[in-house]
Length: 370
Ligand SMILES: Cc1cc2nc3c(=O)[nH]c(=O)nc-3n(C[C@H](O)[C@H](O)[C@H](O)COP(=O)(O)O)c2cc1C
Image 1 (tube, helix red, strand yellow):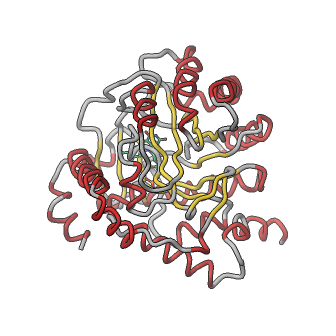
Image 2 (spheres, rainbow, N blue to C red; image 1 turned 135 degrees about the vertical axis):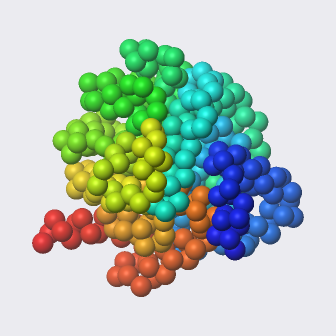
């Protein structure tokens, strides 16, 4: 039914307009008690066997909403109502900013992909902190807060901008993510180099510790799929060295070649980050490499091109304790999480593993033992 609706309505609309329209409906539904209870019961049935413990947090399952969908934390309950097991809000920057000029979001329908150059349009760390402080949660969930650099802040002053966000937001975060991998803020991805990343992560860690009493907020870093293999290893080693809690792999890609893209070449050449199905293989490869390097020392979050339960299951076997999605939600619609959970529970029940935790990284460990 959603597919028909997508063809008839959303596909004819500007993608960003469609996003805001759907978003408004979701938020509205979540505000009406009877409706939200009904929707959550229909779309978010919980499966006991999928209960997940990660980053010291208990979750209903492993599948979360990737960053970028709810940049300003306005729809945490709405997205929980649709079945996501955790919600990563952001990217939030130190200061508010409008993002890049429109049009900045493109659908590559044939490729089940998106290209975006949103450029961190968001209300800024002070406004989002205020919203989170005032939030009265309707559904229990896990809220991750993803932070990034304000565009006008020069690269040399990036750390202070991240620290500002961390100081304002860490207390509301179940986990905090340092995003150094979006392609749409000039120079941002240079921060993935270990010389820059080490002082940045150290400063954000200290800021989080300073501003939150009685709890250590888990800190993760989100990386690009375009890193060379040596650089992935370097980030993994740095994460272990610094006692980081997790790595999220991956953000969108700037690559276009070799992905078998079928869409109109003019669309394919739009500047920005590509997400969705064509990213699947590379994201999985990066995840496997990370798990081979860090094993169970660090929590890995698999994201990029996950479309169905089989994709999610493959990420878990490759080392992901948590998985996330964004683009497939646009194409699959509100029943996506329901199908995902059902399929994942079936895979676990038909596998040799008693729990999801046992399955994490099993393929990589098997390969290493062979
Ligand atoms: C329109 C759009 C906006 C995004 N914005 C952000 C963002 O602000 N911060 C971030 O870390 N990732 C952002 N992402 C990347 C996603 O979180 C995710 O890493 C990527 O899309 C790969 O997952 P997918 O193939 O399931 O979409 C964005 C993706 C899309 C499509």
